[in-house]
Image (cartoon, rainbow, N blue to C red):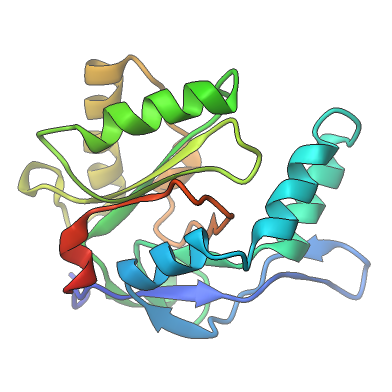
Length: 199
């Protein structure tokens, strides 16, 4: 298993490649921890991008929304640090996993789900916030012992079963990719476990 620590990679906003396609950045700009992510998300750094994206939901196509996110949001690989954003280029594995819950009916429902998740007494929440579009939740957890495996996909399956059993919610299967990037939006109501101010 790769060496583990509490850091993860942060990537800059994406760009348009030579074909004019919006793509995510593949080289990290820094390694950070949970407290940094909380400070970023609750600051105004992504406020314009978040509010603009949500104003586009009724009129923009799925492709336009996807391109906007890639070009206007920084992202993090909470699962670890990478020299290049691909599974084979992982440097250190973090104890964290981001659980991505999409397609909720409203921001209000997302808040209700957020409150339920941070109250989970079987899984330690590190960070929990509403997604950029406002209809989803990003739940960053510290993997419990029963969900820790050398094979990241097995860890994901354990958490997938936990969320399905206890909350009746299907999580985004793309989270099984260890190098999966998570966009960092503006959410002044982001939850952080206070212990991560000290770690």
